[in-house]
Image (cartoon, rainbow, N blue to C red; front, side, top):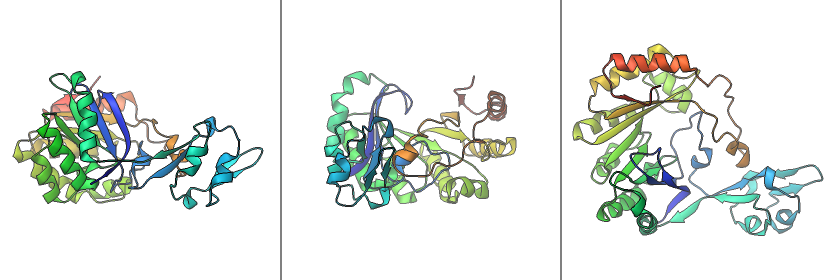
Length: 299
């Protein structure tokens, strides 16, 4: 059984407690307009072109059998739609301007990688599975988590919550902590920003909380999406009514990862209205505090 990953981040301190190794799996059921990991959306190997590293040698154009690369004196045009991910152009590129997003690992290789770094985890660190949406590769994820637990590694799953309830129930048996995204409560708002309804996401959260699992909620705050006092209030009420969350963090929009859209041939969404101000964030944190919720990360 192989999993398809697009990155492994070592010494991570943002994906759960302590120092962690984070495995990023490809594939996601959402298409958030603010996504900062667009290379994780599709569950397939994808070509990456780094324009700033290209020296215009033309080796990729000569070797490619699918006419993906077209070089002139002024430009290197990449027809991503024709790419079959054969990697011949990547192997031929002398400057490293061409790479592939997508590596296959077995669950055993995941654990072996984590165990090499176990000495850095201390008492609180461990392994995190993120994405994309890690649960899209359900069987691989479950097997990798099971082996991690057998190796006495702390396990965290970073999830958008959109999966069959049966899959979530199996994950609870081998997951020490869930990082759970709550993006919006209003169904129409959620669908407008992510492309899907949030009914299953909210139902899964309600299912998860009574099980006594450790849960950290993270709310991306995006201008033009959920950045209104009314929507944050709805989120606060929902979290209060379904009590048990260990901590809640509001995450303002950032532009990290914006360059990756062009690198994989995707059109970057317009984001000029997505940033939120410090004053807005303070107001939203105040709303959470009024509901006696365990807020973290507030300034």
